[in-house]
Image: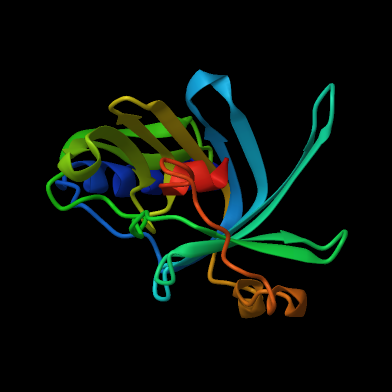
Length: 215
């Protein structure tokens, strides 16, 4: 009987939400969690940790993977205001500063986005078995891209973001194990051996945007 009552209450709350028109939202300014990015030509990176700071415009991504031929380790601290990122290696205590020109793009639904659908990921059969999300679509003229974004209804947490960029292709980001806030703010401070790192010269067309920096 209690389970039935909880289910009835949950469905009532859900139906109340469904009758309201969703509005574009911004994710919390500080997030950490895991991130999977699928790039054009089938390239995939699974970041074991990412850290997102929308206030100071900083992102750090850490990945460690192994394929049939070699190990891949990525530890990058992207500083958008400074327009460079650190390539960090604790193994040999080395650090490289690499320039890139991408503007910081906060995790948010653009104000002119079109709401396409509201749906539940999972099941409505019982409480806590489903996640209510909204899907949004639109375009960004500056980078000649169309997008499709799915965020949670409650909390505005990103689930998936798809960019279709002209002359580049589709880039899909999937977020999981998200935590609101940054447990260790020092994650955005480069290690001491990065102090002497010099800015490398960028070749034309190389590391020009955020996604190339991730690769």
